[in-house]
Image 1 (cartoon, helix red, strand yellow):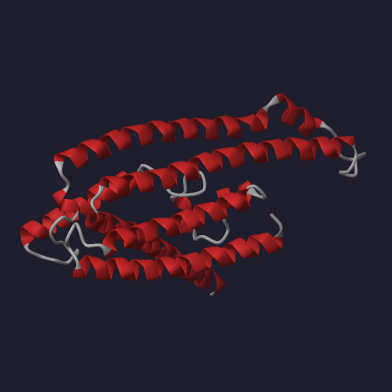
Image 2 (cartoon, one colour):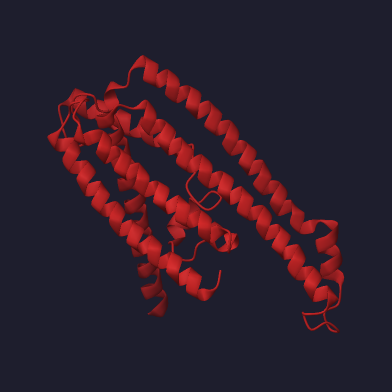
Length: 255
């Protein structure tokens, strides 16, 4: 990905974050004004929010075909966000920890009579036995797939020391201008590695989006609203906390 393409995706990401804030506002309003499982605006609102995530992954997939390495370690996110990255994004299994954390907070608020978390009928504290069973099954399959992808990442990383790479690293570049036989071999070898990482990144993103959609599919519309609120709040908060921390660190280093 050239500099222009990088700037274009970063611009897209900044705009997408702004749109996510707007989506979060709509979700919060819906959670406070509507608690009926059959309220017609809720499924449409949930679908719109999921489509917004689909838009992100579709654009990311297109850009990854040009430069997967950039998207595996994006320079436009904070150091704090980068610390939590797994194969270029959030761990799919984090969706279940988020769901259970939000459910526990809402259950605690309901028992204490405090509505600080926007609790109401049919929120995440009211997950049925059937829903919990489906979520557990989904979590197990997601854990297995996440491990499979992690193994692919490890294999891809270990390929840096394969015979071809070691041979090329030992070859003197003094007599090669980078466009000769050795230079072309190096570029070809790196291209193959990039293609491998691109495939792994695509698998990880497919699992991320698939997990999100599957969790939402198990929940009722109002429960899905609460889950998507928790996801949006966590993502945006982490983004803002990390940005603020980076700015403070930069200021301290300059003084």
